[in-house]
Amino acid sequence: MPKKSMDILTESMFYVLMALYKEPMCGIDAAAFIEEKTKGRLRIGPATLYTVLAKFEKEKYIQEVLVEGRKRTYKITDKGRRAYEEELARLKQCVLDAEGGA
Image (cartoon, rainbow, N blue to C red):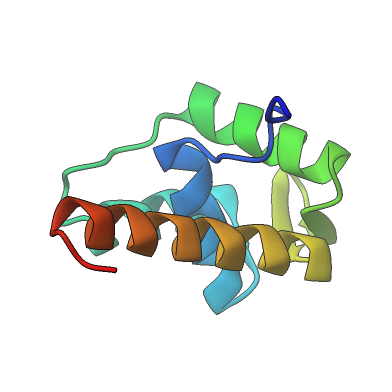
């Protein structure tokens, strides 16, 4: 059965959900979280970030909870939590496979 586009998250998508899994935040705060979490290895630019946020909002992975001028704060939904947890489990299995584990 072919995978749907949201079944496997890109690295940027995974980290955006990780940021919002911790707490609601705006895009700028999510980008800062990602840069700090990856020690600068992954820097997500505004175009990528807002594309991901729009896609996640459309797919109901996140929802807007606060608007202050141009600043929008998002929180992860139950659907988004499940997607994050499923991707985390998939990535852990990939690491186990690579290390020769079960």
